[in-house]
Image 1 (tube, rainbow, N blue to C red):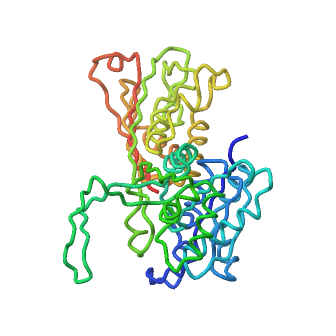
Image 2 (cartoon, rainbow, N blue to C red; image 1 turned 120 degrees about the vertical axis):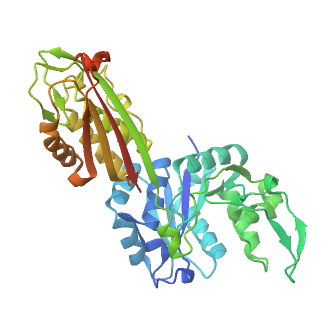
Image 3 (tube, rainbow, N blue to C red; image 1 turned 60 degrees about the vertical axis):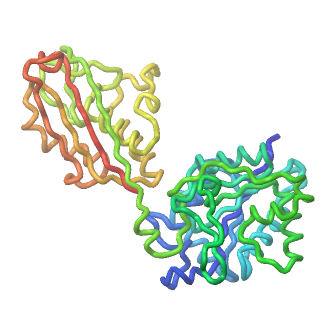
Length: 401
């Protein structure tokens, strides 16, 4: 059996620097909250056996509201079978984490504890963590016993004296700005935290606590994995406002035109003597839209979602395929900025149908028609499109998160 996974999300601080009067972890972020957005990424990245969230004393209900206001959290918890525990924190992050680690040990079974569980400790106010960082950290802990993500500082770093004079010029390439999640062998980290609690010193993070007691860790050092500049910790209100993620996508599709098939464009059947030849209904425009959206979200392409070799997609309604894809993309937290499409078609004339096609696509995506536009071009009798043997579509899209 593999080592059990434990996640500790720290959210017991006071958030005084936000100046909002509300804990930063509970602030809205898109259609979710800061705390819920980060938790969702962990639930999608790995099968955690136990999830512990540190919260201020007697504030469990507020934490639950911040988590479960996003319905995806409950769905993901059920799908993963992860156990969720809220743990009252303390007056420092170090003490709060130690309490969470003790709670983890008390809430794991004897069998789970015997399998050398791993623990990831993550700032609850760091909602932009990626699946790659989480998975890389877990893999590195399995190999090196301890790991954390880091990025090379963009500014040159200096060491200064109390009188604010530079005392040492540091080499930037040898430095890292450490992020979370930080991962460790649970049993060893508990021993380190227990020893640290007996010393009159406040440690900056769990990597420092791990390195402070090599006699308890077998002398293993914390291994660095690649972090991400987007994986910031929310500290000030502008951190939320300035970190919206924007992605663009490009989709294109080409279908042969043959007699005896319907000409489907954007979910609308256009009268024609020829229609698209394809495994599905051949709607070239919806296929381009689908690929553009999947590309922007980084979720694959239409062929991987709906393999043409599978019989169940034979003559499938492309509108339903697009709806399925868009539902998944929205569940991943993306919203639509706009679509801009081009149809290359020699005949029949597309212009009389443009408004209906725009309304159709907007209806499938459940968005405003003003976010969708479709242009049409002929190819002046050139190539397969110009000769009336094919129809081609392009789509660019903008997604926001």
